Length: 290
Image 1 (cartoon, rainbow, N blue to C red):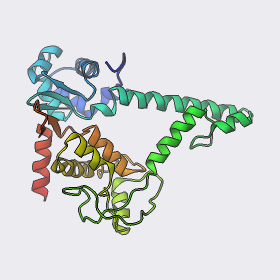
Image 2 (cartoon, helix red, strand yellow; image 1 turned 30 degrees about the vertical axis):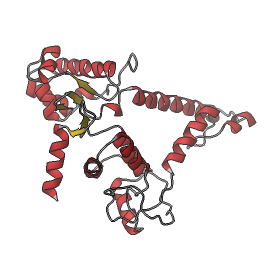
Image 3 (cartoon, helix red, strand yellow; image 1 turned 180 degrees about the horizontal axis):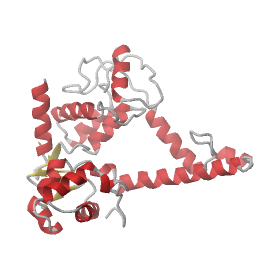
Image 4 (cartoon, helix red, strand yellow; image 1 turned 90 degrees about the vertical axis):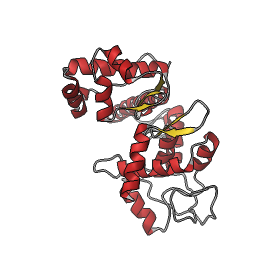
């Protein structure tokens, strides 16, 4: 069990996808949002990844009391239907223990920083002890544990890797290609298209051959072709207008693989990997584009 609370957006009621669910199911927003609460709370209670073996589309309809609600969720892209059960897409970005820890830490850091700024504006002067603890990115004094956490995140984002020789950003066969001296990239958050352009100008590869994501994939058994599909889907989604910006795109891609953000694959009872319905659709789309 991940905790006694889940994250739900305050603007969920006006989300166009909720409106679409209402249209498809013939129910009002209150009923639909209540059904979503049940679904997300159940997933948070019984799973860390959002995959619920044994839960079927008919089961969702029965539990929520809304005929066709499972099919409606599938239509708006909030779940995928696999042979082994239902998966909530990108569930671990907002719920599950890791997402909750990130949210709690972010709120604690923001609250502490706001308090420090208020004290500074009120004429308080940082004492030697507070300066020794550290400062956050805004220059506000923070405690030693928070300073250490912010420093760790900054180090991850600025991690320097060596470029691969392969022409393909996702290297078939892996493991390590000959390395050249690492080039320093911009430390500020940028869009994925801007990052790809930087790599092109620097004759560098977006995901280098010695990136830890390959070791992780080999350790847990994710097939190379699934990594390639993840990269194609990752690149397409984060190249959309208004997509998020990050400091270290290789780090974000690695997280997307470890968290199976797009729910492209699942693990069969015998331990082998297979594509979900979403994964099969994504593969067909990218094959057709190619």
